[in-house]
Image 1 (spheres, rainbow, N blue to C red):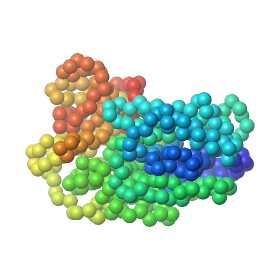
Image 2: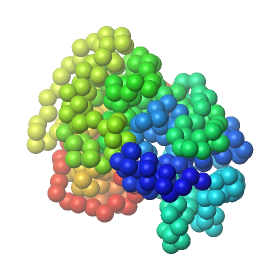
Image 3: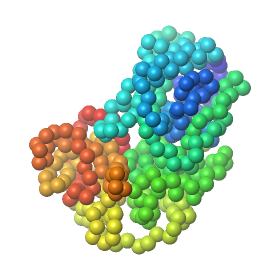
Image 4: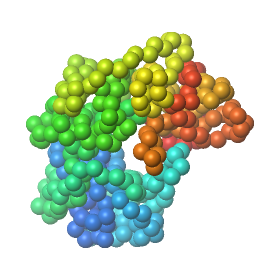
Length: 401
């Protein structure tokens, strides 16, 4: 295990808290153990923010968890035992002390039925000798996750003095697929990390050159926009960037890699234009106006003029995202009923016949036709209007905006 003096030195070098360095260090050794000795090595595929940090970009931001894809189902008991074996292996190699009796593996409490995500929490003692202080390592594993680009084998990035002892090839998503997922996430949630990862990886870093055409083509495959890239571009251009500004300072990254939020404002639109210029030139689509006081269903259509809407316009999207971010309800005219709804997440859904629609999950506090207060899926083509409200709510599930 590295010394607390090295932890302090790294914290000063990066201008971050020592606990963030400790967690990053443990993530490195956890990946080393998973991919060098455990039965998980051919099952778990690293993705997300740590997919970038640990496989491609040594100076990018620090991520709070390890995100994995799993292309099948995994037994919770098996995963629990394997992760405790990983912890024991780390302890043997580094003297980090894990609290194996606190290891937690369970289905993640998400509001979306049929979404298979397992969450795991590993607890370890901090490196400063305080026996009462425990730190938490988080893992999220998405079961039956579809991977579009070839899985990569990359050398683990572990920027610490014991890096030679922590060498291993890790199984991970291709960087372009991770960035495609970041583009997709920007449409459905408001997390400043997605915005940072995209601009840092494509525009700011000199560590890696992303294939921009592959980023945007993979993004289109992951969404219902594959046949309407111009609509996807319009949706991304409609993102309210200023809503991210207050959270920019919450990013945890080496100070040398941070850039001002004005860089985002000045470059995001041009980046989207450049990405989509690599796709078949977009065809013009009809514009549909909406009232500022009552945002109407708008520009997303699965077919030609007058077809059923297949995705929200940027006005509806931003109203729902902003409400979720601020923990306020939306007033929803849906399927002939006015409802007061707690927004939790937004996704695409593609039926077995290949027809896709966008929807969001919300808790209906008024009940609608059934009168039942419950979590429900609201499909875009039945939404007549969405209005923000001042009614706050205490989340019953994780809010994913």
